Structures are given as structure tokens and as C-alpha cells.
Length: 460
Image (tube, rainbow, N blue to C red; front, side, top):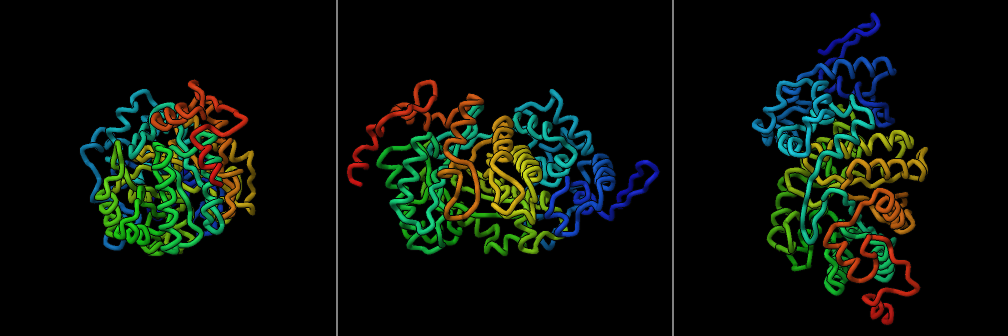
């Protein structure tokens, strides 16, 4: 049991899981789960008590039993005690102070990453202000490679997301062309298929391969089908670049997705054997989102932000090229309004980066949430300041297949121009070579298509 006294009021928390949940900044999903603090005074008391918890305690008191949950076993079995040693004497509060100090450099944060557990990182995020989350995340640098280099300093990549409600090839191609002309697509050209139908999925895989190969675009493709569909496509010889899967932070939640660690390992090995990367072999792409475990009734009594951060241990196991949280996609039952979405997005980004992941964020919301595009502009700008790895590029910011609001091609252009951020270097060179961007990375507004695309337009 954890106890603290504030203003002559005694507060008790039955275990570390309860303390973590009560210390979490208010969000609708935790109220829905019945784990949130009942009032702000209890939340402050929990944060106060959490700050005094030694980091070592998270290795001794797991939030989900070791014998019941393979994610817990992964976290404990893969913990790097040597990397943990320099900070092992700290409490959560001390760790926050150290992270904000000049001692926490890019080099030192890289060195300790595998010594941190998701629960340690989630805990410290709960006692940090937004500016703290931005400052520390900015100091983290995680670089990954497949056909280009993602995560370098002063770079911001984009996933070109040309979703179509019927997977119509012409509609998908039009969106890809539009995105490329805005300089989007260096993280990945990634399509959410309208169904998990094998034929439709493989047609999209082949189409993306043909586009990238024809125009010699230094990027990678991904069709975001279930991992079992992608494994089947690999077995039948289709040109798969990245293997995608949605993941969560408990075994039960991953069971609801139809996955486990062994299946992800099989997919990872299959993608590595294809050896389709030209400058690196980071070949996995994962998506997460606060509330996914709760929506499957698989949160194991944890708050949704801690569940989310545990998913990053699953991702870290497979050295992904990309991982992103789809922060406001599930709806207001989990993140009620713009304020909660902004906080959650910055928490997720901070936690992922601190754990050593190439963290991106889908800056998004559903139309029934108490949020609007102004809120997303605030989150987008904050993430870019914080060194976000990548964002989404969706035609008009309106995903016509998934029915939610995200960030557009011109949103990416705005934030790159405002903060002097550049695409991945190989992709940047391609944009300049084909006179889509100028040499100083300004978009070239032209009266007609660049020469590289004219033959394709004539065929249409």
C-alpha cells in the first residue's frame, strides 16, 4: 500500500497499479474504466506519492502478473540491468529532475533506453508538464533505415496515406501523386485497405511497388493489413516492404487483435529474409493508441496511458522502422476533448522516444469528440518542436475510408516551413532532383506537373 498526507488529509493507494492510475492526468477512458482519481486533490496526492517511488520498485512490483501475461514477461526478461545502473538509485521524482537537467543528453538518453521499463517511463510522464515532455523528447534521437534515413535531427517525415473507401487503384494513385507533389511520403506510403481481403491487399502491395520502382522514389510502402495476411503475401512472393500490425500493452488485448509475440517474430523474420531495404533492415511498422486495451476489456485494471506505454515494449522487441500512436482515433469515450488529446499525444511521443523508438503521432480526432482542427494544429506544432519522427499526410486531412480527421499534405508543409524541418535526406534529394522542392526546400508552385509524372498523366 502507498500512503501520503496532504493538507491534513490522508490518502491511500492499494498498490502500484492503483497509484499509477490515480496519478494520471484526467481523461475520459480512465473514468470509464473506473480507475481514475475521484477528484483533483486525490490526483495530486497520487502524483506526490508516485514521485517518491524508487525506479527499482517497478522491477519488483509488476502491474500485470508475470505468469499471466507475455508482455510482462517480455518487459522483465529483456530488461538491461547494465543500462539501468546509472539511474537505478533514483526515485520517479528524481528521474524527472535528471531528465530535465544538463546531464540528460542525447548520448546518455540513448545509453539508458534499454534499461527503462514502460512503467518507469509512464510514471515519470505523469508528473511532468507539457513543456517537460517536449524538452526531454527533443533530446532523444532515434534513427532507423530501410530505403531512406528516418529520425535525423531537424528532419520531419510523413506517411503518405492515400486511403480509398473501395481501394480503387485510380483513386489511390491520384492521392499518391497529390502527396508526392507536396513532399509527403518519406516515412512510408501506407494504405489502410478497405478490407483484409487477400486479393485486394496484394493488388495494393504490387501497385505501390510498381510506383516506387517506376519513379525510383527512395521510400518504402506498406499495406496495413493484418500480419497474417502479410505473411501469406510474403510466402506467395509479393514485394512486401514493411510488415504492419496494430499492437497493445497486454496479452489479452493482443489476443483480441489475433496476434502474439511468436507471430510477430515470424513476420519479422519473413520480412528480413526478403532483404528489400537498400540502406537498412528496419522492416516493421506498428500502430498503437490509448484506449485500445480498454475497448477490448483487456486493460487489466491499468490506466490507459500505462497500457499504451507497455505496447512500446512489444514494438521495441522488433526494431521497427516506424511506430505511431493514433492518438484520437478511438473517440471521446477515451480522450474526451482537444486538451486530453494534446496531452495524450505528447505523453505517447515522450514515452516512445525515451524507450528508444522512432515515434510518430497520427494527430487526429473523430467528429464526435470535443475537438477541432485548431486543437490539432496545437498538437502538430508541439510535436514538431519536440522532435517528432513523422506525422500523417491525408488528402484534405479527411480520411474518407476510416472517417476521421487527421493532418493534411499542406499541414506537413506548414510545419516544415515554419520550423525549418526537412524530409529524409534521400527523399529530399529526390524532391529537388525532380524540381518538386527548390534547393532550400520550398515547394515549387508550378503551372504543370514535373516532367517525371507527365507520361503517367498522358496515359490517364
